[in-house]
Length: 395
Image: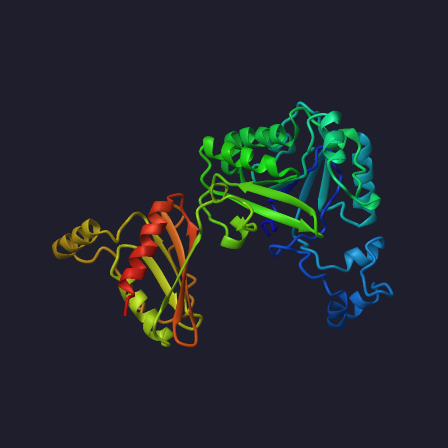
């Protein structure tokens, strides 16, 4: 996960029952443990990193210097909350030991306080939240879950009751987050939480749907051969995550729990990327939308205010063009080249109903076309756009 590089924006990391801090987090592959990380290869690229490897070529995570040698996002700012003073005291020690006092702000909260206390923190907006909620609804629930598993001793849960148990378990806890997010809306770009039980995933996704959330993401975390956890994120904004982020799960997750696909792919039987790029640009430049294509990278980005590709919309555009000139006028210096134009007028992009990116890639006998959904909440509109492009690109 990443956060905004804006120094005025902060990430709220709340482990209300858990005091762990992530010093560096990157977008993860579907299975981070699918093949061990080869630290020896990394060591060949960084002499300083090599000095922190143990004799078995593994990183010594017990050494603070070894952990700090991993790249950090120096502009990230965190706020961490916890309801337990003892946990928070250890967190403060970790912050000081890693020289992160200027970047991580711990806050002791009360169980009845908001889980996302932006007003108490004096924050107008944050980029996203991370939460590792208490999984269990009672001590009996915890023991029952543990007895049903066959695990070696080193994998046994060592969390204290205050870290592991809350009224209603993780479903009630994350549902409380969803309720708070309804009031905060886009004061937080993305709300995220981990889930320890597979059964909780469906309940949380259905809760999001009932609350009117149309932009969510599901992630599966695979640790070793048996341990699995799930991540769920949601946003009240209209920016869509990548396909591998929004639907980062194996085939074991039912499709109705996944968000609408944010990518649409098809192939055109030709080897000329330039030809396909020219046809797509000619098609989209004839519509009432914003479009810019860069042939050097075979990629274009566009924004539409509505369905402007339907027959009715195209007929209306022709009538208005005859009566009063083109709806979208190109400036004299817009000759279709690929030069960046820092003075582009971005007015209307934030309000666009649909944002999309089209990328082309040459195969052995075809050109692969990938349309990615960048912005919007109307999946029918995105699907309609993709279908229109595919039909018009038939060669």
